[in-house]
Figure 1 (tube, rainbow, N blue to C red):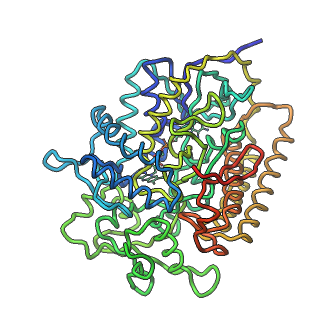
Figure 2 (cartoon, protein in one colour):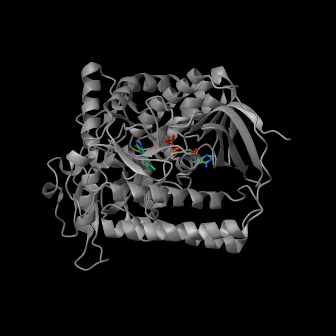
Figure 3 (tube, rainbow, N blue to C red):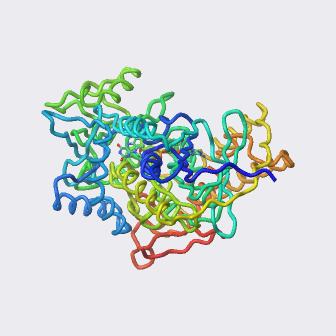
Length: 536
Ligand SMILES: Cc1cc2nc3c(=O)[nH]c(=O)nc-3n(C[C@H](O)[C@H](O)[C@H](O)COP(=O)(O)OP(=O)(O)OC[C@H]3O[C@@H](n4cnc5c(N)ncnc54)[C@H](O)[C@@H]3O)c2cc1C
């Protein structure tokens, strides 16, 4: 019997969480970091505004904790938030020592403010390219370590489980070769799932693979109904849903409706710096026309901002806008919300352990409860650093041994062009259904429509499987992604149906109020698709 290859630690994902974990693990064994495209293609790479961190001592940390808890609308798991804000300063100091260069003036780190933060505490790099700098620094540092190997352009397509323990993962490379790698411990750091929606700020790799693979292996998911929609993505026909960072509002941008009115005063006392879900819903409502489907433009306005050179402060955003003939200093910028960040994910304890032995999760793919029902802006890069390191520490502490497993059968061949086309149609149908039925404003009837669309997606994918029967082993990255999206969509829909209240990023037209008596709890999606609500 041919056996699978072995490494000590397998890390699925090369964003901030996976890389930080890999660095922690590398002194103790061989680490393989797998990433679907190049190491630079991740949500981390596209993060603009910055990383929130309280580096000014105890009072600063206490305020960061309160802001995080406040944004999460009653559901933040306090011990997780405490770990985030207290360990954050050390993790960021380490990152600086390893070479990350944040913006400074006269040697002092510059800080900006974003929505729902009581103080300016967001560090940024190259103006609005913070994620790219963090990713660059971590990749350089990790590549210099002889214990870390990278497998780029490689997609994890399955987990091997026996007796409740994850033993190995299947990896499909660019040439269609399927390898099985067994490991002492596997970390899911495969990021979010913005691609489940037709409108998203996330890059194409964000298809929720890690979450789906963990769930299919039997791990519990939590809080999947909470998808954060960023209020201000560029809204121009033919342009990508490019993110216009919250830092623009931190520097004084106003939101105006098509009548030119600065409308946020009607929605929240913090105006444009209100929590994201409030701003996103306000923009959606202001953007609704008289008739169904009719849209009115909402704009971001920085024309009045003085004392800041907007092109220098936001060079990346300015360059993208210039491609469309727009200028922050001169023009109104059309915006509308887009799916941005998943608060839910693979349920973990504070140390990254999932409900399956040998399987750990960190970063956007994980749910520690740190964000509750709504993430505080710029807390997720910090989450990746803090919980990436913590997950690695528990992977070491658990000291599991590698178990030999059988090598996989060869992968099925690539899809034909017709099959590729069909898969793209299925994915697009699902994405539009999720946007229309499980987006910013949901209700029982729309969620039921969403379930119907998800079921027809699942049926179409099952038909594919039948047609490719006998050719075991995933041969197409896109097919694997379609399956993952379909799985994640179902988790969002079921969790959204179960939470019959409105809280944080989850807004139900039919239950517009918060219902603490019944729902001041986290939703947990079990292996058998049952949803339980638990107080953590
Ligand atoms: C446009 C944008 C702007 C943002 N701005 C900010 C900000 O200013 N501040 C902030 O704190 N947060 C911001 N965020 C959110 C933040 O960037 C992410 O939440 C965070 O970077 C997630 O890190 P991660 O390591 O968990 O996952 P990611 O950085 O998304 O990395 C996931 C990795 O997993 C890999 N992967 C996925 N599936 C597979 C598979 N099947 N097999 C192998 N590899 C796989 C991917 O290739 C990638 O390497 C922003 C997000 C976006 C999209």
